[in-house]
Length: 287
Image (cartoon, rainbow, N blue to C red; front, side):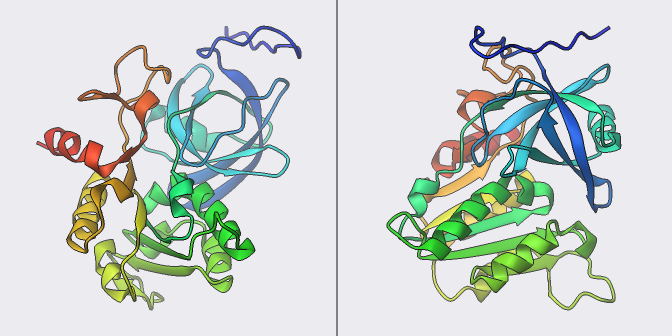
């Protein structure tokens, strides 16, 4: 039997390996086998995650998996956008409003939003990769609207999916576009209603009026590698390309070594990594 505990204010810092109970307060269907769970602390909360960070999401009696935070609500509730690909992720997507889940974290590195100041920023997301990027896009979009020294000069969001039903967050994408962010989408296999681009996400780069200064990329590894090579060919320096690597994370605190890629422990040194650090590691992993 799993015992859920809480810690009163002023108590010693909790064990980072101890899942903190959170209650499901909303459940949204975002695509085939894709669900966004909104959870709120059921007692003691956790530090708010930053864009690009992940948390270990635990279904008691089943297991836990690393999931990036796709949104933070004003009241502190957290959104996790999850695709059912295994036993634990299936249990997460099957969770209902009122159920308890456990969270540990937040862990990992963040999208370097400070590099966006005064620059043209390009975001490239493939499939579920838009979820780990959503918080970054929201903050960049808000900063651009507000202006000021920390705002990007221009923000472009390119999104790709296998089919139109796999394009996440249509309401958010529409809002970004209405407010002046350039948003373009492409799919591999269109349906009868699709009127947009068809093909690889790298094909959308040819539609851009100029070269971006910094890029944030997330999606399947083959998509990220292809996107990085296309950006390099267009003249972007490798230290301005940032991607989010996915590996089998387990502890989240750099102790177990299951997410090691070369010299990096991705739960600690990632998941967001610059291309000049990731290029050789990704090439070795892909063989």
